[in-house]
Every structure is written in structure tokens, then in C-alpha cells.
Length: 361
Image 1: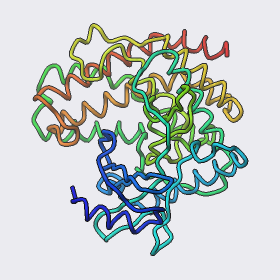
Image 2: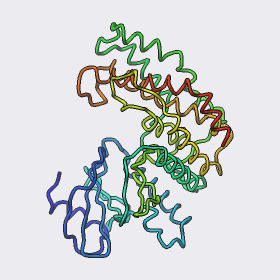
Image 3: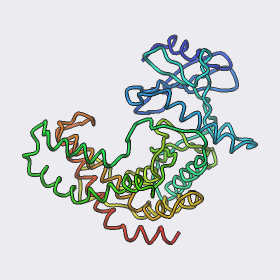
Image 4: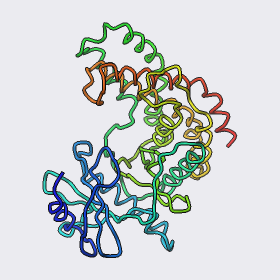
């Protein structure tokens, strides 16, 4: 990490109002370096180093964010609290773009939202709130006139993940295909592969549209005011065209699991219908203004798709010799695989109940 003076010089490339008093770490994000810039002016700011090892096209990333926030801002015109309900990124003095780069690192500055809080609690109340908020977020962007791109190409493409698994099996780089458990897991996964790849098929057939989605739906990606009301959605780096299944299924993969995704107690894994029902109720209430019948009827499929996809990704990484996900012990990716596969089966068994609940909405 750079020293205080270096950080100050980076921040000064942006149109910050007032004198900088201090720059210190903010939050505990895993991807970008995030810092709070305190000033003697009216506003404080958030300085972030964008991780361009993950987001390789920073210009596209910021284009997506700029277009989305500008579109939301137009829809909120006249709201006296607008500056707390949509993120504001400052332009770079030299280029006018919403980021600055020295050719190696990329930085951006946004206005710090005052009297705002994030929460990590996952319960039915917050799940309903999360569903409604992300449904509203998608609804506001459903008519965006700009063309946005994929900041991480094929991020939630199940056909790609299935192909990567088959390539891992064929290559057997770490010599793990001889393990009986690996063979058993593969036999469990493969019968569902075709069904789990139906979103890409429906898209090619013109049946399923792509929307502008957040693609990282979590309770702690919402800001709340002091009274517990949602202000805005944050952490927009993964904002991109995708199927609505991304925002719906990805939340439930983590929130509806009764244990953590790497808990080895597989017998304790279950899919929480109370979380599903709360999130689905909020989501459909706000997203029904744009959801097509095929999108709505396949929301239970999305709840099954994401644990399946994650099981495939953990499993392929284990077969490849643990080259992508960080592991804490040799069997870590195998434990993750078993956990997500158990969650998939739990969700799959509850698909009729999920469909009935969605129909009731």
C-alpha cells in the first residue's frame, strides 16, 4: 500500500472540495483497496484502487457505472436526498473520466455517503428488503438507453463452467481423477448438466433476455439510513448485462444455505425456504414491472443453478490442482464442492414448493 503522501497526490487528481486532512482504510473489501478521505469541506470521499487483475477493462467498468448511475440519477431528479440514493463519482481533472491511471494502477473517487450503514445480517426481514431493493435496481435500469458490456466476460455462463469441468477431467493435471470420491461427485454432477445449461439455450433461441444486473446481490451491498431504510445499492463493479437469474440465484446460494459454503458438516446443509420466500416476495414485488413470464417461471431454477454452478467451479479447481480459489487445507475445494452439491440437491428437492410460492405472487 502506498504511503499517506502518495495517496494524497492520487486523490488530488480528482475534483475534491476542501483540504485533505487524512486518508485511512475503510471497510474490509476483498477485491479493491478502499480508503476514506477526510477533508475540512462539506464532504468526505472514498478513494479506491480498482483491481485491474480481475477487472481487466477498467474503461468499460467505469463506463457501465457512469451510465447506470447517471440513468438512476435522472429518474430520481427532484428527490431532496438524491445524493445519498445513488453513488457519485468525481471526474479526473486531466481526462474528465471517472478514474485516473498512471498506466499501471487505476484509481477512482466517490463522495462518501453520510449517516449510512451496511449490515451483514441474513434473516427473512433483510432478505425481503434485499429482494425488493435489487428488483427496484434492475427495474430502474430496464430502459437504460446506453450499451453496457461484460466487465467479467461469461461470469455466470453455465455452459462455459461445464466445458471447463470437462476440460479439467480430460487433462487431469493433478492426477486426482483416480480418487473414488472424485468419480462419485462427477457421476452426481453430470446428469444435471444439460438442464442447468438451459438459460444459455433459451437466450440463443430468443426466449430469454439479458438485463442490466448487479451480479453480486448481498445484504451488505445495500446502504441503509439511520432509520433502517434502504438508501442505495453499492459495489457496482460487477454491474453488467446478464440474466435476472444472476441476481436472484446468487443471493440465495449464500443466504439460504443453513451453513457456510465450506462447512464440512454436509448433513447440516439445507436450503432455507423462509429466506427464499422473503427474498422472492420482495424481488417479484419490484421486478414484476419488467419480468417476462419465462423469467418469472424460472426463478426457482435460478435458486438451483447457482449452487450447482459453484459446485462445478470448486470441483474443476480441485481437479486442476487448486489453481484458482485460495485453500486453507488440501481438501478445501473438495469440501466446498460437497457442500454446494448438497445445497443444490436440497434446493432441487424444493423446486415444486418454490414454483408454487412464485405462482402465488
